[in-house]
Length: 252
Image (cartoon, rainbow, N blue to C red; front, side, top):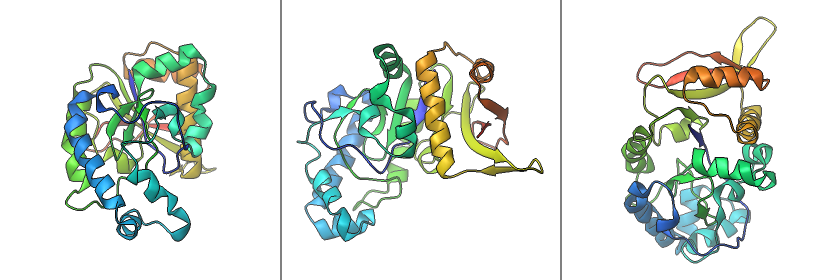
């Protein structure tokens, strides 16, 4: 099983790991496109005003430019610990025990606009780049889409896609029976389903944490549905779209 998480705009500062090393990252097939984006981001950060425009930042967020300027020399920490925000606060990676973190190392990836897919325990620096950021000469969707999709297609087994739609567009999961996209919904008094925003992220974080704590062996979509039910989550068949992975509704 491979669980795909979106990144977060907010990240912890600092770290105790060595500076960014591409050889230390999972999915080595992505090393070349990673270098291209990192180089372009560092170069743009040398012009703070241009970087702030590209990232749509305000004056109080100027420190984000400094992060990008020092991408290749700043300390690193595991991706699962680097990201903060609603989803990652609910997941709370730093509080997981050693067995759960090892399970995450083997089965969880975060989709970064800067580095493509990275393993949950891969050492990464603090940075600021989003799926819709603009870099000179690079359209991130065109740059990543086919490469990330090909890397995901190489995975032999269940794929549980918890990414946002924006990041799913940056590298679609394969369309096959053991690949599912999870959407968080609520159900009103009339039985109508409505997609959630803030609580969408929290629900995904709690769902991912439950997986890491339980450490189930899941090989198929049916296995996932059965585990979710026993773990107290309501996971229903969703509305599949042509040419996209099957959707499941996580009812929050």
